[in-house]
Image 1: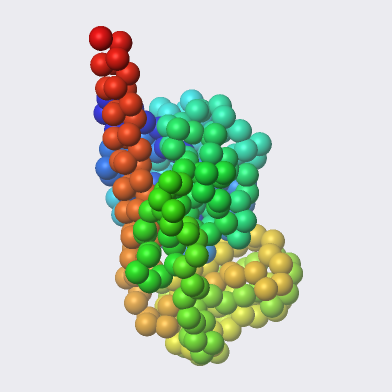
Image 2: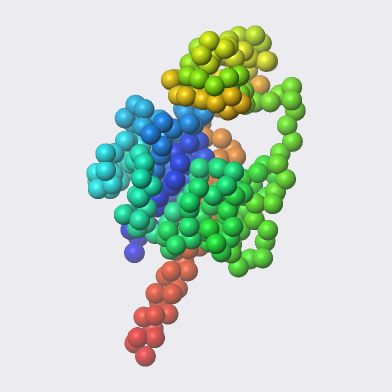
Length: 280
């Protein structure tokens, strides 16, 4: 069998899920992404979730396109595109029965992904219990374990990496000052100075605390709650980086690819053993 014979469903089309889907597609897998009706991705310039708002999104040469149903989505994979499905009923996985499921939603707790969802289920970051929720977990915290694959039988404490240290003066992600409708006043890639108003929530301004480049920005008219992260401001002012997959996301995507290929090898070994047993 070819890698394209294996369907991978990536839950979550934000920056991390997009990096994973991009790497798997480039490696030969067939990939489908599921999303919310109003995606909350900040790094929209590198997120396939933008297809929900605009019909399509292109990230580093790969096109993702919104699909009305799963069968139309599979047709898009034939031409090398990534279908994005709004999965309101959370039933795409049971209907499509993929070989691999990757939960890239980065929630604090598991949102319902189960080990039984596919032959190989991979969780990204903490919030997953090996053997119960998934077969493998990929580390997402910066440091030596970034992108490391933890298996259910490896006796390694998955998700135990310490959170990265952050300076309050250089806190990249800015939060909503109140609940209401989000409205952007700048665009991704804009270079800004301290005090520039980047966005507002029902008239409450969100100003830049320091100079930098707007790398992440919530979509207009999305309802937010007070304290919700709505902007990512890069203090280094690297405009070009706003339109490229981050090094962190690439490392995590590499870990997912490692896990997926290891799963394929295991299945092939099982099939060969079964075939040999039948012949004897």
